[in-house]
Amino acid sequence: MDVSFNSEDYLKMELLRFTTAGSVDDGKSTLIGRLLYDSKSLFQDQIESITNTSIRKGEQTLNLAYFTDGLKAELEQGITIDVAYRYFATPKRKFIIADTPGHIQYTRNMVTGASTANLAIILIDARKGIVEQTKRHSLIASLLGIPHILVCINKMDLVDYDEETFEKIKKEYTDFATKLEIKDFHFIPISALHGDNIVEKSTNMSWYQGGTLMYMLENIHIANDHNFIDARFNVQYVIRPQSDDFHDYRAYSGIMMGGVLRVNDSVKVLPSGFSSTIKAIHFGEENWNEAVVPRSCSILLNDDIDVSRGDMIVRENNVPKSTQDVDAMICWMGEKPLELNQKFIIKHNCNELKAIVKELHYKMDINNLSRLSEETSLQMNDIGRIKLRTTKPIFFDGYKKNRNTGSFILIDESTMVTVGAGMILD
Image 1 (cartoon, helix red, strand yellow):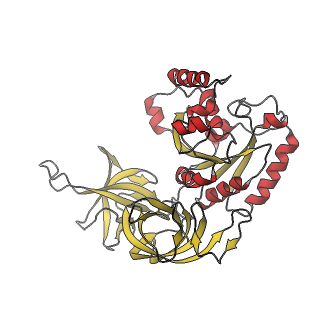
Image 2 (cartoon, helix red, strand yellow; image 1 turned 90 degrees about the horizontal axis):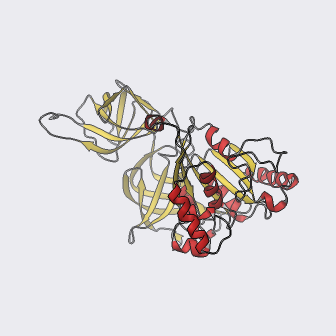
Image 3 (cartoon, one colour; image 1 turned 120 degrees about the vertical axis):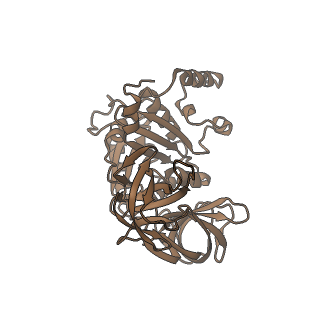
């Protein structure tokens, strides 16, 4: 592996999480394999193992898809089934890749992989153009609030690197994307199999003047993707050593879900409503003057008040919304359909409480983005708008405002299986 930076530089690097999505056989796994291979982000033993696997299966060349398709069924069928996470770094950035399936029956896996992404790579086969799964995955990326989309027109080698084909697909996708809430998207013509415009500029497409995929991944601006205005600290654990050295020590560890909190800030603890000021902010043995989203840390308060797991620390005069009637978009993942008056466990940040589905407003038609209001249930992989009634109020910001405090999952009470991923509406 080519590593030209030390461990201290590595820890300070900006992290970009991205996901790949597209229809079946669009080349997602091959793309990720090519990206890792050409950026010299693979160990020699990994290359040798995949080379041996390719030879054993009678392949003429190194099958780059095997770097991410690790399940036996994936290798046998030549498809991606589960979400595969891969980690690599360049001197400019750290990356976490979520390689997600293309089959419609694995759309729920795509939701899982995309839920924390800063960026989505939507792959389109240059021969087929935009298909239903392209629209489905783009809609999900939009609903999940992924800020940046890279539309990669793949397999350009199979259409003779034709500029007209690229421009036609680009126009069609742009027309479709105007109906979605996608603010930043770019188009790149590529051939994952041959490496055109992946890490190095393609000599076969001199008409394309934009950056390579790697260039875009390294340079796209993500620093402002978080909500830095509304301070939200999610308490995950109460630290009470009760030792001789730390007899009265009480700190609240968790993660900044939004905004900035500083020492001496006036804060309020929810749901109790008690107020205090921040005494100190710790990260391990370090003392910080401020905590910024998305950092994890421990906060000490000047007042001894009751704070427990699931509570939220916010600024005194900037509190989130609170309600028991939750209006949300839902990506349904359950094998059994979602129907009215069903009871679930809703997990919102660190809180778990009971909820019931009161209304199904509509189901989304993936092809034309119309609303099907006559529907009374959602099937697996459907997307719709629902209203939930929770047993007690939850504190939230709308998903568009804060992805962290505006998201939740639904869990089946009987099986404890996650059956839905929700985005709370304002």
